[in-house]
Length: 151
Image (cartoon, rainbow, N blue to C red; front, side, top):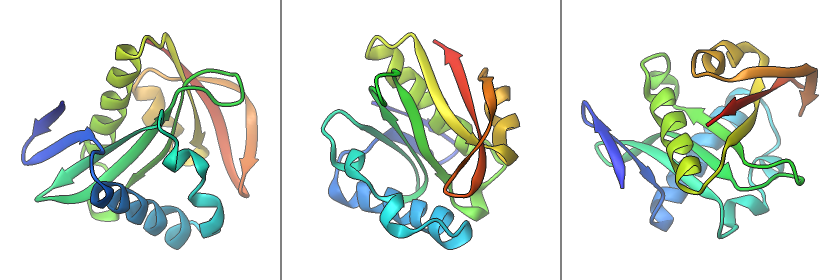
């Protein structure tokens, strides 16, 4: 199951190659651009059987990714590791992946999703119906805001 729009397909990761493509995008964005340590970026949730990884593909290449975890620290479902290749930013593909992950969450019976938005992109999540909760905090030295959306 997935969605298509102007030669972009958004779907659940189904193959090792798709997961590798997702991790490659994350490494370019978070490690290469933002300086997050590589050993922090890839974690045990990447291989957990209940993690939902989504990708946006263009001509077979992963251009955007995100993941949905069913429960983080007993606080419920969490979207994270949203990353968009530099050349694809600000054209809607990130929103396509976010909406797709929300659809997956609804299908799993989730009523709310939480995420940690980097401060500079919190308006993107607000435009998608997420509300800020609490104060700014640092995650790997980067300012973040917790945001929540009712599904």
